[in-house]
Length: 373
Image 1: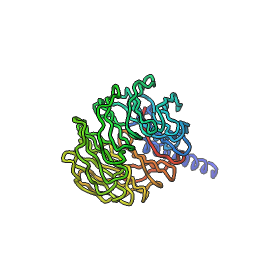
Image 2 (image 1 turned 180 degrees about the vertical axis):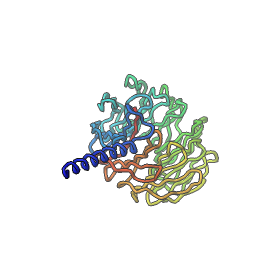
Image 3 (image 1 turned 45 degrees about the vertical axis):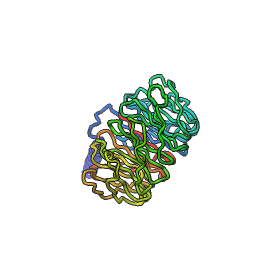
Image 4 (image 1 turned 90 degrees about the vertical axis):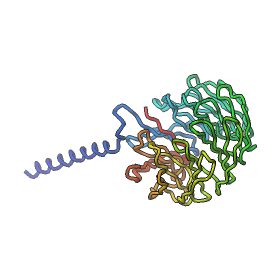
């Protein structure tokens, strides 16, 4: 009698555990992800030259893929089942097939590339090579270089305008912004900007570009119709990351020097406010609804939510050490953030403003892309 009772208790306990596991899996599974779809984060690890594929359904690493020394500029292709990036030390762009986790192409682009951008239709990729002073356009289908252009000294970032007609390149060596024709990469104009230009943001209507200085308390405003400098706006602190409000009306600029975030009115080209956030606010991530910013604070190891409409700062969310780049899953169920010192990926549930888990990745992770397929 006792053994039968024990058997029944063990069976019931096992059944309850199995049901609990299924329920947890359902809870963690993104609500929009039907069976057969895959959702992965891809993290570029600068110390060991690898890309870590993280299954965001199972919340676990799935593969580690060598992509080349100092991977950077990791981007999900907008239409193809591919992740693209560059090897800064190798001087090439690489292409990962996400269905096989195999690198399927190495495309020489010049010395010391750092970033990559796609045309709005995903037909072309653009890469500036800092050591070569050049820009290349790559046909994404054939993976061949189809155009080459000349930039200024030590170009860093090549950014495509929303209409796909212009490529803008920030040149740190000579404090200029190169404006190129996206089809031919012929130079349309070279605009002087603040010293050591770095990040570039373009208004949705394509009329203006905003270019940060990496060393000065300035952001340059460039008229893209006349291809001329409008003003160098003094921010009161060295700018870091920058994100546009979805309607383009405001620009949000993090500043570690001021321990906060600056708000720029993009119509009047004036500073429109300041929010104190923490010790060293850096990378900014906009949620999928376009109403909340999440700012990584590498000094306090937190991510700080900021409501755009009210400019209200919410309680900071603790994550791993030195949080940096972040990205939302397509439906906004999760925010994932790279922790560069603790070498993990923080998964945040925005609905509850809480840390869900930390997933180990490669050494010194920096860049991040998310792909659903």
